[in-house]
Image 1 (tube, rainbow, N blue to C red):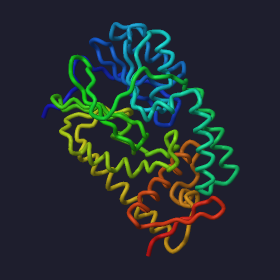
Image 2 (image 1 turned 90 degrees about the vertical axis):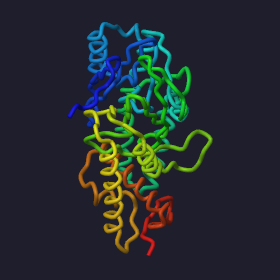
Image 3 (image 1 turned 120 degrees about the horizontal axis):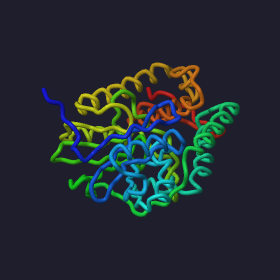
Image 4 (image 1 turned 135 degrees about the vertical axis):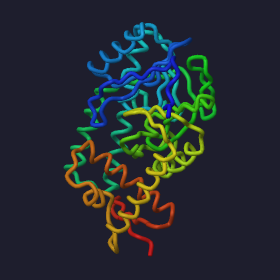
Length: 325
């Protein structure tokens, strides 16, 4: 049986990152304009790997004319500002990502995460560790002002093909995938990853909004939407290509349902904070993984609350969750 392949104009550049997730996949689309989908983090190893990857195809950084950022996480966008200075490339991303690429974004993120972690019942010492971790991530990022935005349903030309923009919030509120229906090809970014779960990360509300986004709720809906697409090959933000996206999505949906059931079992008759839940589910993790653990626990609690299976009360600004009997 022949496995589907990417078109000859589309190349995967594996770029190292300093993060536990490992290398990020940056996609080079030859043609006019020469396009990068994502850029990698701002560090020497990533910079060198990107330059080497471009050179292997006969290009330099100055030849890049367009950069499409799938979402505003440092491993995907950190080098973009440098690339623009060297090339004058146009930068496009979803409108929801724009505020998180601005110069003030890190300060707003830090303030939000301090607030939401207190709400989750995280002790002061752990809050300090998390704040230090978040500040450490900043050095792999650089603010950038995109030249334009992409919305769900927009069409973008890569290599002479029309690619449809899919806004798939979940892992990040502004995350986009790119879909080429004729080739049955999806650039899935971090929406679909073959070997690791795409953690729907806790995020601040958009500027001007107050309600906390329910990223896991959105993610589950977008998984079902993408499952309905005719896709032979998905090219993810990390790890190897995906050749059966529907089977993977079934696994992901089953995983999240199983995790939610486990959380209900852990809760039993008690009222617990998100921090207490994370301590049971993810004992002994480091600050980076602890942040992701809290994100996952909060996401599942929000989902269970939407479904009417849990509710919460706040005491002294800390949320205590209990089952609905």
